Image 1 (cartoon, rainbow, N blue to C red):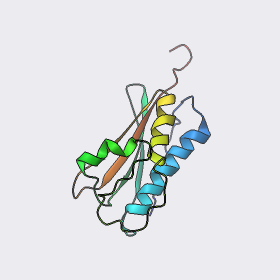
Image 2 (tube, rainbow, N blue to C red):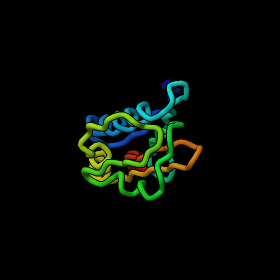
Image 3 (tube, one colour):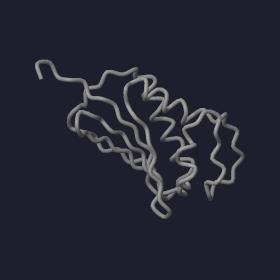
Image 4 (cartoon, rainbow, N blue to C red):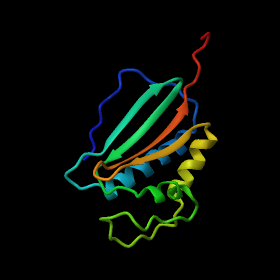
Length: 133
């Protein structure tokens, strides 16, 4: 289930829309793949200190702490995510490419995952300075 709440004001960033869309789609695909069908996937946009932060949260299985840093590596497959028993045919490039795209836009990526509290993938992008400000 995906619930979208419209924001009242736009957040100006300079970015390759296709690449940022690819990152959001990758985060959403992962969340929808791992989350229970009856639980919401929450997408949020927040602004703080001239940074836009987009996060995607699901109530699926947690990612063990030792896996959280490694999931951004090229060709890495997280093998210890509980509850996901389907054959993984991915190349292990999805999250790696997300990190590359966001870092090339001068942003950061991250993940927060605690047992029993689901997983949140996030990224930040700098906000474009307004003219004269």
